[in-house]
Length: 382
Image (cartoon, rainbow, N blue to C red; front, side):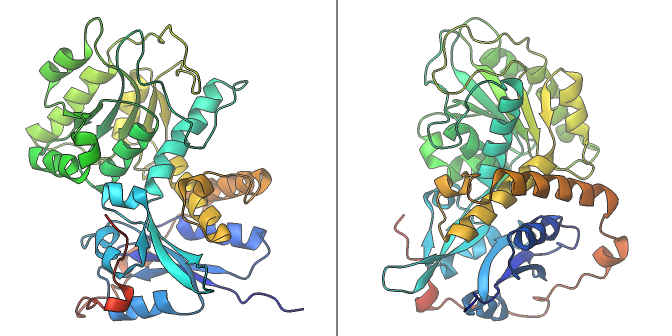
């Protein structure tokens, strides 16, 4: 009996020695009874050496992190296709080998950060409504209108994760999406990168508490149901950094009452949801601020696990769709529950040593970036 050859999966980026992703993925591979392996490939650039690995026959798939050199964007020209979600956010953090009709495979880029945010929020919503059926497919959305006014989302930050979070909230039917960030240029970059949202006027920058009052306080004004924090947990030093916390606190302290009208698919949160993406430490400064204001806070470990499970599902099926990435039946509920617990336990009991972090070597150091080749140019139609 012939058995499939084991595949190699990679996390590309730099620095990445601190990542908990290998614990999650290798636990899943072992539980599935495969000899597949997930390893770190420290690189700050897309090099020919890295591309040779991606094009090899034993390559199974990859994940990437945003680093000094933005690999999530730099890898795009070397892929065969890009998902609609990656196109919408101009970011790719996952590579999936997808079989083609002619017996070959194509390298498809996907952005599972979106699913990390969306699925973590849906999981928390299930905790609040344990008897309700809450789907994970594209129908998981709030109505476009509510008797109380617009149902909105909030994102704090200005980078690639902010774009993914805004897209995730929009997929849940929330609009407008309010943005809080210290740097107006970064906000403009987010708006520019999400033209399908900005064209609808769905992205609104809250510069300070006065904007919070203008947009969120009063009858018929937008009501925030869910928020996502995407800034590092570093003590604010400048007045601009402190203003981010001041503006966020102004938004978080607005009293909340559940909308009174019916929501056909997703129930309204009994307590508003706040997902804090950074998770080192697990209870960041923003986590504590949101909790103090009475929000239901979800830590970043949950989002990390959700996006990792989305990757596992896509790699297992050889498909890069949102539907596949959200289908818990692919790996099995018991396997996923065990993987969640194992990953959290590893973060607490087996943290990465400082020596490993300090000795990490950038494999792209001193090397030129890869040269674009016609064979592996991104072919998706934008």
